[in-house]
Length: 342
Ligand SMILES: O=C(O)C1=N[C@H](C(=O)O)C[C@H](O)C1
Image (cartoon, rainbow, N blue to C red):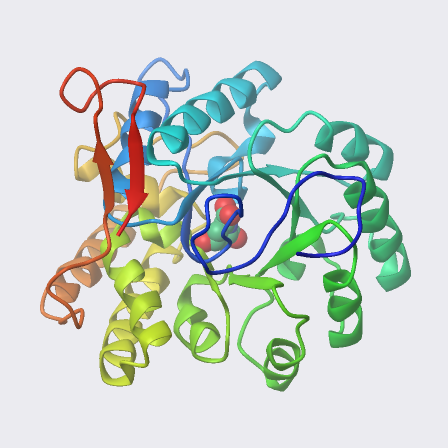
C-alpha cells in the first residue's frame, strides 16, 4: 500500500487479491475507431477492448495518446470511457483513463471526474515548468484524485525531461501508484531508476520498441499501443521475462521490437489503425487532423513484421487467458457471474 492519502484505495503490483488493483502485465491504450461518417464507432471500440482482454491483456487504457483525445469532443471522450469501462468490467480488468494538460487547476478539476480505476496523468506538456513545478503539479493532482494516479512521463511529447531524483520523488508522492515510462532508449539512468523504486511502485514501459529491456530490468509491464496487433505475443513476452525464460524473451522481444518499429514508422496511431482496418477489426483507418492516414508502404511493412512473428515460439502452449463464466446470453451479455484470470 502506498502512502497515507485522502483516498480510499489500496494498491500493489502483482498478487491477485481482489481488493487490490494490479498494475502488472500488458495494458492496451485503445485507438478510437471512426466510422465512415467520421463519428466514433463505439461498437468497434467495444470489439477491440474485448479482443485484447480475451488475448490476455491485463487491462485497458482509455484516452491515451493513441486514443487521439485532443481531437475528441467532451461527449466523445465520455462515450469512449463508458464503452471501455463496460468492457473492462466484464473481464474484471482495470481501466486507466488518460487525463491532464498544462494547467494544474484544470487537471485537478478533471481528475476528480475520472470514471475508471486509475487516472493516467501526463506530465504537464508545453509549459516546461521544470522539476519543482512538475512535482508541485503532481502533488496537487494526486491529493485531489479519488483514484490512484499513474504518471505518464513522455518527454518527447511534453518537452519536459526529468532526472532520476525527480522521478523517484514522483514515485514517493502519496497517491501515485505507478508510472508509464516513455522516455526513450534504456539508459544508465533507466537502470538506476528501476533499481531504486519504492516497494510496490510499478513502472509500466510506454516505449514499445524497448519494452523487452525494460521488462528485463524490472518494469512490471507495459502500456503499449503495438499490443493491439499481437496482444498474446506481448503478453507472452511479459510472462517470459517474469518467469525467467530468457531465451524465449529475447527472441520474442526482438521480433516484437521490429513490429513496434514498423507500427511507429509514422505518427501514432495511423499505422496501427491501418493494420486494424486491413484486418477487418475497425471500419476505417481514419485519424483526425492534424494526423494523416498511414502510407501504403507503412502498412505493408507492418504486416510483414506481423507475419514474421508467426514463426517465433512464445515459450508456452497455454497463454494466460481471461476465464469468463456465467455470462447470460451465451457470452455476449453485459453481466457476468464470475471472472477470474488463470
Ligand atoms: O496511448 C498511449 O498510451 C501510448 N502512446 C504512446 C505514444 O503514442 O507516444 C505509445 C505507447 O504505445 C502508448
